[in-house]
Length: 559
Image (tube, rainbow, N blue to C red; front, top):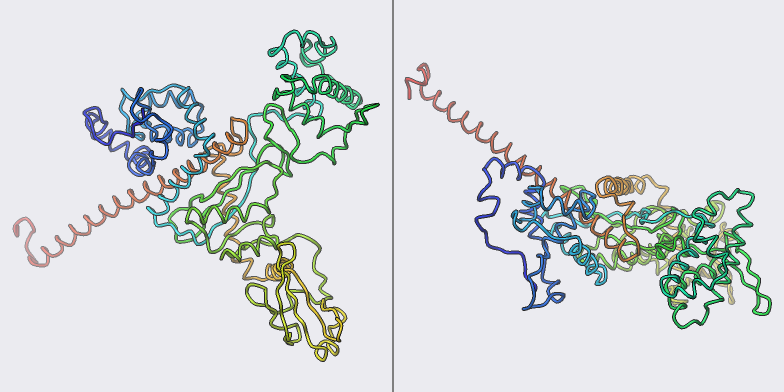
């Protein structure tokens, strides 16, 4: 039965039975601000549909479970350590506003709550809602933000190619034995001997023998896939599907009449290929195996602290260039869209510059793609164009086109500007200019908006103003480092894209809350120090005035 966290106080509350000095100490620690500032930010209502309205035992309050999940990531704890902290740590009980008689739950409750969040993609909703409330409470500016990505490793071993084959086949054989022992026993004895009975059979392979052993594994893989292909039950097993996937990604198979299995060249294996059968969602990218997390945070100088405004997790093979439009879209939905977004060269392609500009966002990111511009030739950036790049104003010699049109080619806008013959035919730059002579004698300049944006950016990024403005981007690297130190961001102890995404989102939320708490503690300390100084100044002023009234007389006599 659904119930929200109790609003009323009881005689068991910490503020009632704890000594005042204990309560004061709790308020000086992280527990006080968490209880007073963070816990009220949690909205429990979105979870009401997942519980019975009027039947069954009352649930553990959602606010308690979300708070415990955040503290789990903030302190990088296991489930057992979380349960122990709930039972025996007074700071946890005070932070979550639960007394000793309520401070208990079970690991199954935590597991079920995580499953609920993952299957319904509610981690992002919790993150966006609480972060938005922190931004409002602290009056943070979101006009300037910065973006970066980092590699995330899930709870899986990093396997060699040989290890990948053996683990996948072992997993299928275990699943087959569990599902149908008779089919397992009917397999050739080589599978029992090589993959099940002799632990570490491939561990002592010499480098000179690796190819031979790997080829043998490939033949075994094909035989098992072919043996159970079309089997009504076995072909539906997840372990069998992983073998099929591995065979398609790693091997070449000849025709049906004389099938011959050969290994693909490693360069021909895609980045989204299977890396470990224990985590089929993990892929391979230029930063390694696993996943890629992208973090966006505020970076306005006037903010008392910065917060992560957006977090996303994808396979490691996904390019950074594809992130920017999605980030802008999510930030707009969260009502936190920036005016300027800073990012590194991995995000600074012309497509992203144009896409951001169309959304009213200035993407400040260098562009290092393609060849370096040939400075002996006229570049697109030498033409003066409108802010959106759709109108050519003048060429390098100051001549304006007599017509300029915009068309769309494969969903990309193309600009055509026609310059008069009398201007271009006598131009000293005509031989090195990108304009081309057309029928009738006039000259045409044609470009896509992305090409113009790239050329303009390569010119702009060489300037001192761009380099000075761009310095603020480097702060996101410190944020990624802080998130890893505080929450263990780069190594999550779970598997699967949904679970990893949920864990990383809660880690980003934990980082925001940690910064919020530190800011509140600093604010309280300054207020206390300012109050003490104010009292000292006030008393000193009174004494000075009294001394002024009774000059020459002792203060005690004057009183």
